[in-house]
Image 1 (cartoon, rainbow, N blue to C red):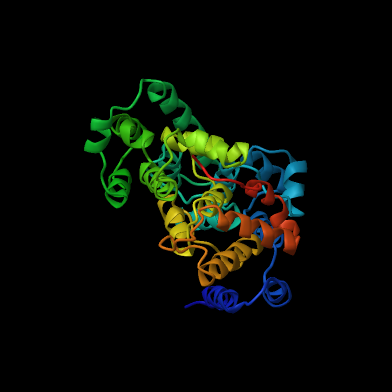
Image 2 (image 1 turned 90 degrees about the horizontal axis):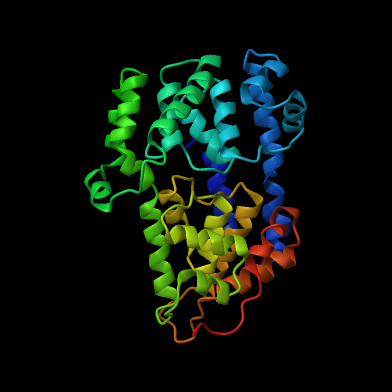
Length: 342
């Protein structure tokens, strides 16, 4: 176990031993750097070792020099595509780009069954530096023009093409040129359009477990329970198998569906993300909430007193009590939930 892994394990263990929010605030949180601090260290290191001037690096990433300067002072890019560009500009291989996406951007790792990621994996394994980004943009635009909008996916075809991700990665690595890549993507278009269906199925299973007597639509359920408008839209998109997983929304879903720590980590795994991270201030708070809720039987679905909304109410109370900048923006996801679903 390396030093970083050991430190993460130690903090996770201390969170599990934490008895109340005051101990969490005084003992655990001071051990954790903010996401902003971690990003400042990382982006400054990337730019310094890239071999490009600041203006040149900004151009490669498709942003202005002013935006790059803001990154160097702690501003975190707002979308996953920008992190992909940063990784390609830094000449990262798949492993290091995955780390950049997950640890600093809190996005899914590269997933070859996603169209954009399939093209990204192809170019970073065959091109270098400036050429990587140019190729990525050119190939992706060319493929989108040829296959996107060609019609809906037939479920039977998708099932036929449902091969293991490892096998899919291997087939991608054997592609010899751009034309062969385009043919590969065209032949597997059903796979790209159903990339996250195992994740969707997992979420839907928990909705049915928590609200077995509900007869309306999933959207009506979310609306009736007072879920945030963005989470209602997310659930509606999941039902249609078209939502792209984002980290905080996955956590929000887990809390709303009374999932425990292990179940939320399973959602992350299905979305190709790292598990809850003890070295992230917000996620350490979530880990404390889940551990404490489990100890107090809030997550015991076999109990006669089980309430599927109690975890959300408890999480909201803890976050309001802590009153930390890192969790403040998430509280709106946990609006007051009253009454029973009919």
